[in-house]
Length: 344
View 1 (cartoon, helix red, strand yellow):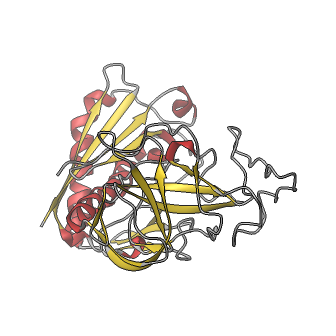
View 2 (view 1 turned 90 degrees about the vertical axis):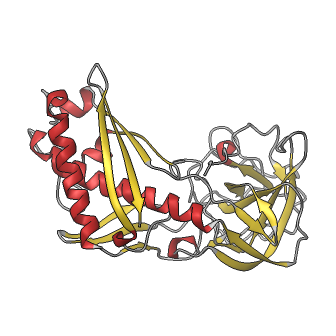
């Protein structure tokens, strides 16, 4: 099942939204595993240069959605695809609107409105756009200059379609459920790999690095993480083993020689967790896209919890197998883990 590329081409300008756009963050249901829902269309605006084969693309925003968008600041899990009232949703990205009604500058601050009125502070209320003659401007993906959840911004799930949808109508949103399940399996596998790898590497720490994981082991995963990516087949995590990690107490002596035994230990732990059929959930304090969510899994060793904005399986028994392959670069400075879930 191919993964469509994210909307990554730079946009020439921010996308103007209707003047009456409410300026509130999208409410999302994907943390609970939803793959369908109904909601009102708040905006449907053309994306300059965003089409395929010269056709125009549209940014469609609804009040609520089950779609998981690509996160612009940590793009580990690809976007959901599916349909919106039968119209194909070929991509889904994070969007942001400065609540001051101005253009966000490259430094990550909101420039004031161009009508001479004073701008709202960026840490002000987030319950709507102020009255201004300047239309609100939607920034997409890599064009957003601040991290998701920054105060003073409305955070939106933007469904990318090749045709418009009528604003104000209630629409049916359907996520490609098979693709979602595959991505969720890869993401759950990624977190389990992190915990199993931390356990296997624990003897290599000469001193306390000052950070432990949910199971009390030195958190190699977060301390050495360089990149993490998922697709419908596997997750790939790349770790940097450099001077800063060694200063924290990690020793990489004979790591290449130990790699087969290390891989075996990690896979043995992963197999035990899958066999335990531990329940999995995403804990969310609220329905907003910006809510600080956490992945939680009740493992035999105790409850594990990791900050996460993605989607996951409901229990580990949905997997028949979970295995990782570890590779070390020739110079010993990069460890790559490719973790593949096998569904039942």
